[in-house]
Image 1 (cartoon, rainbow, N blue to C red):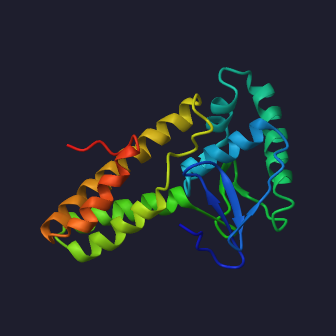
Image 2 (cartoon, helix red, strand yellow; image 1 turned 60 degrees about the horizontal axis):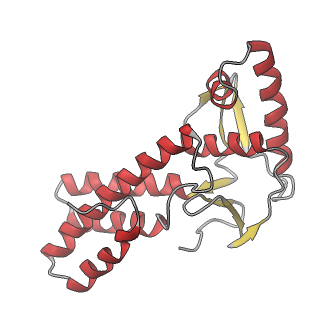
Image 3 (tube, helix red, strand yellow; image 1 turned 45 degrees about the vertical axis):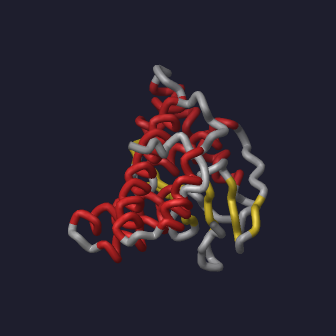
Length: 204
């Protein structure tokens, strides 16, 4: 799926690997450190939620001393912001006191869009709005192009998010399967079967 963003925003793809787009073209990000990249990934997971600095410090440096953690976090956040200087010179992270989140005035991300579409589709389905459900569930299906951040196989926090998103993807596909079966759309059912190579989609 091609990124859909305004000319003022960059688009972050996470399904299939972390990639930054501007005007539908990939933008190279020279990460100042691996920790800066991980901090960005963690904020992608928490999406539009404000996350306290201490929580992020514990994720990045488990069990570290408070003073050391604060210094490390300040340095890593600075490096993260510096990493994005070439991508329209934007500030990717905003703060509110000791809480942080992504700057959604400048950034959109596929995992957030996927979660919103999948949850909306499920809600429409439970209300009996099949047309609305199909629209949102198909949007979610298209966004989930591959596994979430597969290049980080051993990170626990990212792994938990990967499993949660995969489960949501499975639910979305199962609802779509029910919709297509009721409509007797054999062609669309066959297209869902082609998605079974994703670990997320385990047919009942």
